[in-house]
Image 1 (cartoon, rainbow, N blue to C red):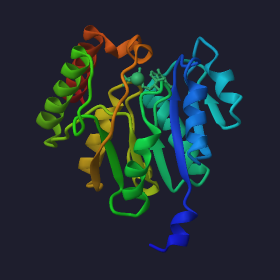
Image 2 (image 1 turned 90 degrees about the vertical axis):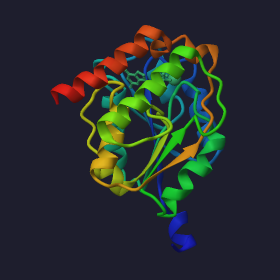
Image 3 (image 1 turned 90 degrees about the horizontal axis):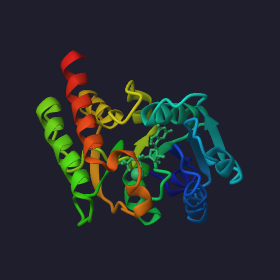
Length: 232
Ligand SMILES: Nc1nc2c(ncn2[C@@H]2O[C@H](COP(=O)(O)OP(=O)(O)O)[C@@H](O)[C@H]2O)c(=O)[nH]1
Ligand SMILES: [Mg+2]
């Protein structure tokens, strides 16, 4: 690919956000500082000031009028990014768990056309994480293997990069957290080329205080994944 052509490519960030008023500005500022300017935050009817905080950053901010879940928000953001002419789409979290430093390694293979999707993996690098989280993630890896026949080292990493073509082909129908498995299922089913890339996910007390960090939350997601597969 010509250097010139690559330079003109639009890398678009899709950032789902739910009650992240404390971190959203910092995350967006970090991306802007690294030179990325195409950013869409999808606020999912947060109860705090997430929407207002995001708005202040002069980026695209969309809002669901009810809380629909991370999967639905990503779909909303991707549709928007594609309409805006995105060549590459990055899924990036709004709670500060994903690192800007990992972006070049994640984005380059897609930008260069080597693969259509890169998936961040926190198990290819040594990452400290809570036990409940480790069990959920390893359980998901196993279920993914049983149901889809694909062995990824990390099943539920929200850090992904997709080519425009991949973003158009991948259908997300799960509104909530199960969309992560669905994306992998779509990649396998549609034979979309992918690669896992080692990333570090930051586990801060802020990120851990939220939802799926609990053991019960972990079990619930695993249960939903199995249920969906059995009835679907
Ligand atoms: N739009 C939207 N985003 C969500 C929702 N739940 C979580 N998120 C966002 O998705 C990202 C990952 O969620 P988080 O709860 O941190 O999950 P985890 O870190 O994967 O356990 C964060 O940026 C959240 O703000 C939701 O219901 N709607
Ligand atoms: Mg998080």
